[in-house]
Image (cartoon, rainbow, N blue to C red):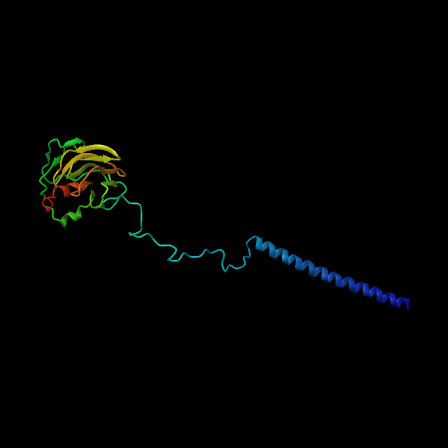
Length: 227
């Protein structure tokens, strides 16, 4: 009887040890699985709530638009007759009419210039093939100032009153009397980026024109009915 009882007790201890071992193995497996899952989340291998985290969202039309010609941008306050370029050559077109010297009409770069009869036979439609100039006028520059976007060594200047011509806020010349509608041509150096102004003007206006095609416009000005 004692041996039978001892055998039962030994068998019970073995079963308990086996069951305990199974539970311990299961606990180790579950713990290892949770540890692996936590490591993958921390390393970004698994991201909850993102369908495809490696691909950024595509910009929609409302988020991004290509710049258009109407987009606001920093531009010179001028009548830009020509297509703007970073640095247009100072080379001027050849005069189309005889140029005569003016009397002394001012000081500095406006002391003495040249003029023509303005009767070169270029029509209003033909002049549109020669638009490589920049022009400052009262209509487009009500404060009398503009920013050059091309280089030049001559300017076409006209004013209805005595006034100063300034470049970068420095007076470079004074015209002592009205120039008439056609105005005069003067030797004056302008660089791209210069601030060009007249200090005083009346409603009858002023104009400063320069650029490679300047003589096409100056020498046909009266022919086109502007004088």
